[in-house]
Image (cartoon, rainbow, N blue to C red; front, side, top):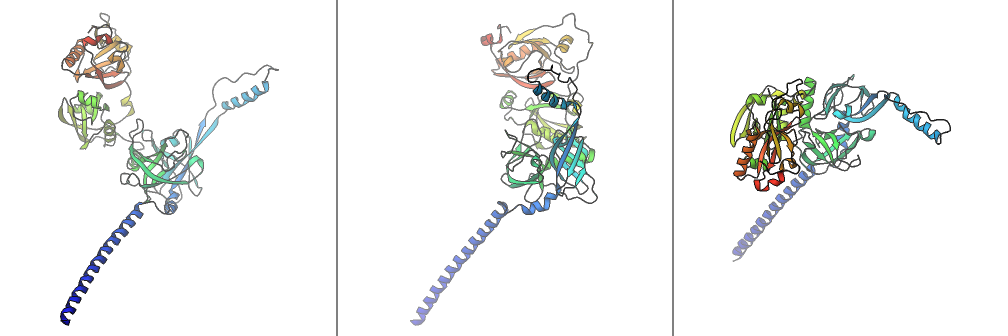
Length: 512
């Protein structure tokens, strides 16, 4: 009996041990996970201090001081007043201050930059040194160096300077701007208001910000950026430069928590181009493009509004050689899907010169693949051609056969009309010579001198062709017609709301 009780007690004790052992193991697992999570949170959370980063990397951040020599103002001096004139003393004082502008003077400005190479290559913003006659780079130790401009690029707002020193200079390296997330900590160092090296910190507030017509997708931050910070670096917590501070949004000119930096992945590419060639060599396709909209997509019979709509193909361009046509929707470039026209511009610009690239587009609802060899972009390729002078007028019929449709009076293009409206020589179509006020055409941007090149992707050369195509669209039940038009050097697609005969009083006299 006693033996049996002892066995039962031992079994109970073993069961307690197993239970406590399992509880201890579970507790250990929980604590381990908790410590792991806490350690991870500390690694990704706010640092206790930025001092180590500042101490290590601030010597590579410099102040940029520029001098612009402004010549004496040309013009009349203010006249002398007769003696005894009331308030004559005040006039003389004002005249003296005004006449000071007749003397040559210097305009000084301050910005920021950072050294990316021990040999003395310095990155800053284009606008910091844009009109400078003298550029001085000042280090954190107060050493001053005269700087030469290696190259600069207005489009990206970046510039590369070179200074000569007797010994290797402290420098910083580019990081991967795509590797940091919204909410990650960043640190900036710059020269706000000329105060000298100043450190601020914040987080990445947003990414891929597009501002105005810039092709740059900026990093937005709430790290304080003020006047004088332009050209300074934005660091991640590993001490890598992931952005170049360039502009702010502010009604007062001071920091309101909305600053922008050029991403390092883009800035590094631009600086490498400048360092190798002295300028930026950008790929060129040779088309004018515009953003797709749902209305454009619907008029083209497409299910999505992604892509870039081609409005013009420049003569003798890579696009023309490849067979691109106005009305094509480019949906893929070199294997990368095109979300919008800005994305296509960025990708083409960063494509190597003379490289063969496969491009996919949609034409009349069909998927087409073209091979295009990129050219090199040159600003002169985007200037409007000057009208040729001295062409003989078409005296027999200077205005051609007119037609009035949808509030537009249309005419074939003649030499006289081409000169009158400054229509480029390579533009063909039908010109609007009069537009009825408050008509659908007027409300949608058609002006006298507008050339209609295509209607619903079909080329036109006579007014009657425009009338027929618009009539067909009405008969098919379409609410809009897609027009490719040219006006004062710009070629774009527009949507023209169609008005039936019954509503034609809005277009003027009701004639078609």
